Image 1 (cartoon, helix red, strand yellow):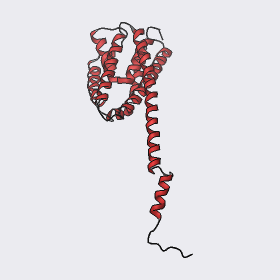
Image 2: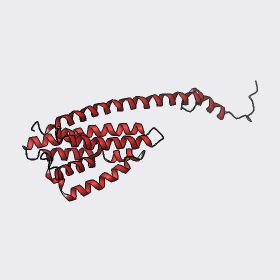
Image 3: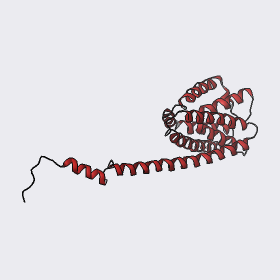
Image 4: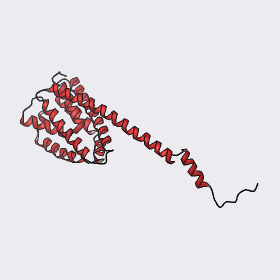
Length: 222
């Protein structure tokens, strides 16, 4: 695969893991109206653009509703990497078969990585009871995806570098979220142990013993 395609494959793959429909829509519009040669012309077809636009609107709404966004992410665990792999293949389809296969694999893996990071971050945000954070993060994701993909038309390596940095920062955020959730669990377990809610705890055993004692039973004679 040529070095000029590598940043496009990585950028489109990373972006597909965040919002695959936005990527197809933006790339299709760039191909149709900006005549970007690196983008496959099939993405500029009216039926492809229409389908991508409709699905983008659906995702834009679903991705901003707490818990529904996580369910949507679960459903798209296979969709987003598949879109990333397909875009990677289309970007290199006029190359050798080996280059096209490598491009498809690179696009699929980068999409899977960014999808897992997105899903992890959004699951952590859903621990917050208010919906404002979901809306803000989802909007930021949509704008970032459109901006990074558009930047690739003039500075492909810069856009790929930004995507790589965002993937790294997202990975760090997921680690911090997991640590926070683990801390909540430990505190909850400690509180449950003190309150006798944890099976096998001292408080629980004492409560069971008290409940099992029959106050009306006669006392054994000495």
